Image (cartoon, rainbow, N blue to C red; front, side, top):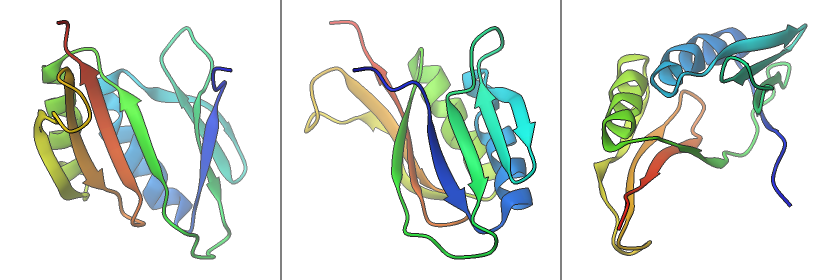
Length: 124
């Protein structure tokens, strides 16, 4: 079944919200909903599908999440915006033939150690 939404727990909620507001802007994601200790990001006109939830300062194990890009340029913009917002490069934008001949992606490590990816599946 398709995933309706997902959330990750973050120790520094305010820093994570600022980081993802900048990092996800090239993907057209914006803050769509917010409650005390949680914030949902989504594409305008759609539901929030990526959430941050405060772990109230507790460190949590890192996760891997892949966002779907619409073009190579969007993958590159996600990577650049993430680095500018404080992420660490975990894989420059480029083809990943080990995952498939059409798999174009970039990877970053966010402020809390999560491995975040933006992937675009190039038309064959």
